[in-house]
Image 1 (spheres, rainbow, N blue to C red):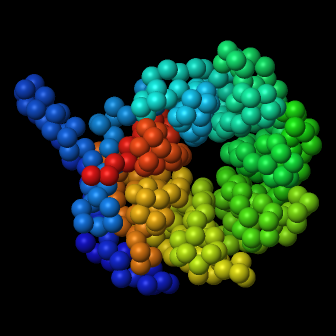
Image 2: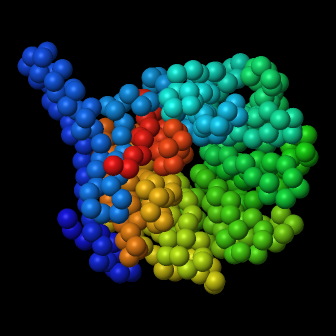
Image 3: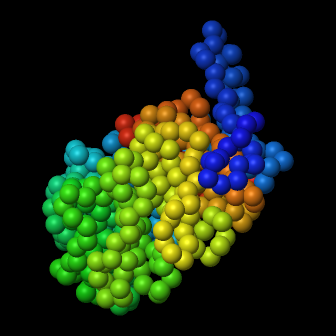
Length: 400
């Protein structure tokens, strides 16, 4: 154990490095079988006597969403068939044409039935779902790279045959769904790299011809988080920017986002952001996942300066960062998805510090996105990895 934290805040917590057990090739088949059985029993990450006893279990890759090795950019969890469990929308391709899929949850956290989405393969970064035309069926929106973005309308037979395009043809990197103008329907927010970002307003019937832009065509926006950061009752936009400072666009209540607050370091390449009140002071804090520099928490206050910063200990190639209370102890945790290196969980502690836990040591995948949701309805949020060029894995969170 060793210290973990930053000089900018108290640093009296514990640092725990937990690993999976992995095995080299054994000389006989019987030994391989015995070792494989042992591996399945031990392939968990455990913490004893600190917070709750908790494990993240992957069953040696058995818990995967499909067995294809696509260039997966992201996986989104949503109850598409409205049967009470979370299904998985898999966005594949990025810069190249690949097939997107909807994987149905079997009700126990397994994904053994899949439906291709779209007649053609796309170069996709994000799939999100909502009932955009208020007909009672979940629809699927797709953000693509330099080809038309698509919206597939759901139906009683799960065909998704009807489709429209939305937004401009741009290098879209992310997609969010929210009723930003509070008119009772779901709008679409596109994060575009080296192009203006777009708010596509729904007219209530699933048409998105009215578009509001924010940012500039020189911005390299990778993600937009939508939250009321200044607590004035209006939804604001927080963007993750590569090669410039990150930005907060304040909503004046009329979807005018001309007031901008910058935060972070210009030299950081921020690929992902999330928010949560880590110090329980009533103000939202912002977590940044950075490519090749330390990830950070920027603490909010009433002045919105974000000058107080917690820097993580190690520089990593982080592509995705997510906030959730994984062990349900009342303190926010962080999941870090990294490129070609191990992924990590940071369990939040009462004193404001974190315990670092490594996920599978034997895997150093190119993780593009982390998604969190309760896949098997046991009350604990699970972790889903979107991996490029290999299987997409998930970890069941278990209390011992």
